[in-house]
Length: 225
Image (cartoon, rainbow, N blue to C red; front, side, top):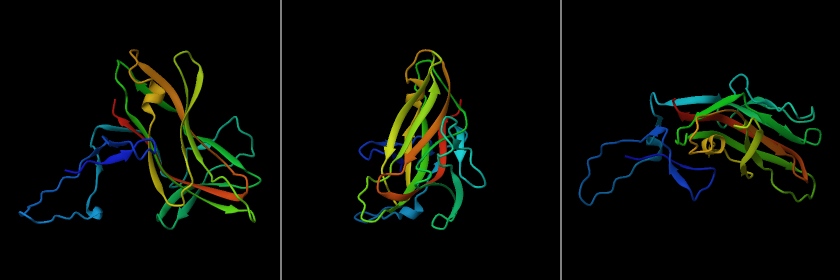
């Protein structure tokens, strides 16, 4: 058996078994002294059947549920849908330039339910990459994608918790972020029900003419209630 593992919150030193997928199982007849090689392309994992809930699935096929946050001005960039020839699929694109130098977008309204002393495991997953164009002879700080959650706590106070910052990469990367413990206060004795949204932000660094943020396969996965 081979069990899938993930870098939790983008931390390569924190590998954890990904419990929402079943292990890859293959029967092999081995000979003494022999060498067995498995091709990575032959190894695949599938989501565990009948146990999972997907409160958010955003694949950018025809439209998107992500919108500009209401408190932001019209100068904030919006998310568009384009065809990515490398992925051979549609993806989300956020274009920043001098006229629209930042973005602040949120998902649809979501609900977190947990309690009784149990920590509810809930992962936010997404693929992302970036590219940028420099001004002449400019030195810049590379662009950053910031992810946080916004929710209302038990005292009806509005909260927002920054989760992670993802540095520049021009190749598609998949990330897994544990948001269950942030929203639900893992281990709380009282049953917790909280409304929340996923908030993505970014800005145009000094010295850049433009930056493109690409997003795909944004989803939230948790155990079925």
